[in-house]
Length: 258
Ligand code: CO8
Image 1 (cartoon, rainbow, N blue to C red):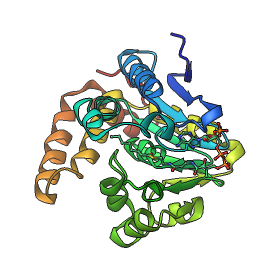
Image 2: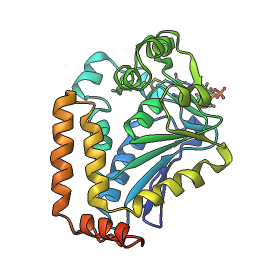
Image 3: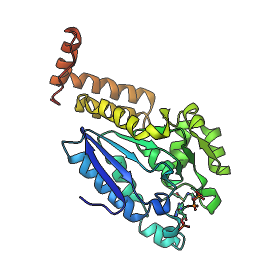
């Protein structure tokens, strides 16, 4: 499908989704988020896709929600239209893993979009920030909650109250990103990670994603119980038999998603 604000390619079981509004540093407007939701639903349903990478340009992953689109809205419009709420839910409902490959600016809604993905690989020129305070508002797509869980209260408060940016090295040090790579190799590295995931058994990949996400929603005891039940359940799959047999026979496993 042809999109106005995205470029989508599928290669070796990975859907690469590029945000493509260069004139606005990939600012997230309703059209882009609707198309992103559409592309994610299509990728989730496509058996030729086993992992998803979302990226932007070398200058900007996304410089935030589109300020031009929002600036004149009233409270009543924002509230009654549930601005960006359904779009956010669609991103979070995606069952296949999503890697955010972030180069350049990931600000406001851009930082929040990256944090809604399953993990973030950053180019060494990445800059993360929640600068909404400079606009007389606050984060609105989960930034106060997710950034705090990633980097802790002190750094999160610093980011949200001063609006300062965090560079890639600080983001890695603080646990916001899983790794930093040279910006010029970012997409290549993210695709390599995605292809590694794509080669695993899909049922265990989905189960791992679900179990890690449970850690954010429940107590430790409940989370560990969920994990143990899921671990036991995977013994009902052929892929568990194949994975363990392959290890014992010193060969590569041939997973069949069964
Ligand atoms: N919205 C709209 N347009 C933008 C945005 C944006 N967020 N960011 C950049 N642009 C546009 C600029 O207006 C400019 O367009 P034009 O050439 O037509 O004037 C073009 O992109 C290039 O930008 P700059 O000239 O400013 O480029 P610089 O390299 O000088 O600066 C910056 C880059 C530092 C990234 C700067 O553009 C900037 O500060 N951008 C705004 C960052 C920001 O404040 N982001 C937060 C936005 S609010 C938000 O994200 C809330 C999310 C919650 C939504 C909740 C829904 C429930």
